Length: 253
Picture 1 (tube, rainbow, N blue to C red):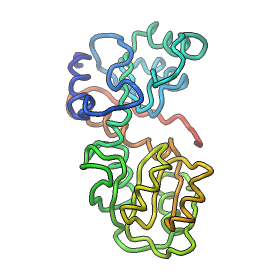
Picture 2: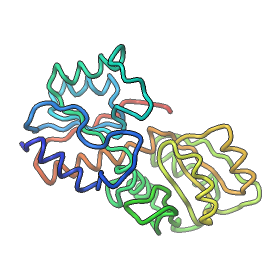
Picture 3: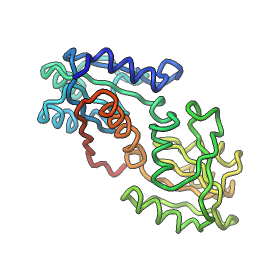
Picture 4: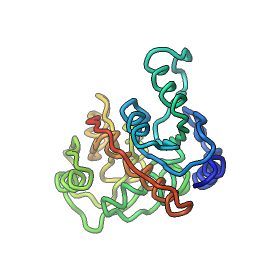
């Protein structure tokens, strides 16, 4: 068991949370009991994950997508009220890290995705490792776009949507950013990547990929961001001896 404030401070420091200008609050979003023995992790603090935390009697829920996003309605009604009531009635802490968990050089979503795909990390197109969000790396051996799509499917258990660039053949240099980062395809192209992998795709992304001449793989927002929060939960278990359980709420998007 560890004091909640000690655990939160450790995560804030590890992820350098105060360094990031984000669309949401990083850190403790809802305060529950002061001591933590059980930590549940998941991608998004949806009602299904909250219910799982209640059933397991978690003391703290750690997620990548929490609450209080920029420009969202402030009224505590409907779905928001039900979610907050679940946490407050059951005295469960909600801890959330968005961009800091994307960027972390070892435990972050981008780092964990590279590990699963066997990509050799070389740096970032938009800053230093640990700060940047558009990661760059090389494949052990060049491969075709469809072969890479198959590797992504095997690694994430989700077939990516592939947009092939007709003028480009094998892929050696890969750029990636998990989640809703489809518009960063331009930065990936400017950095000399043969392909860019992210979570979501927009209508415009297809035209950008084809006209810039860079392969694009949309591997799912949820699917690409399962592994950072799990790695952070495993780190907490090792460092502080808390019990950790990762719960994957199925999401095809």
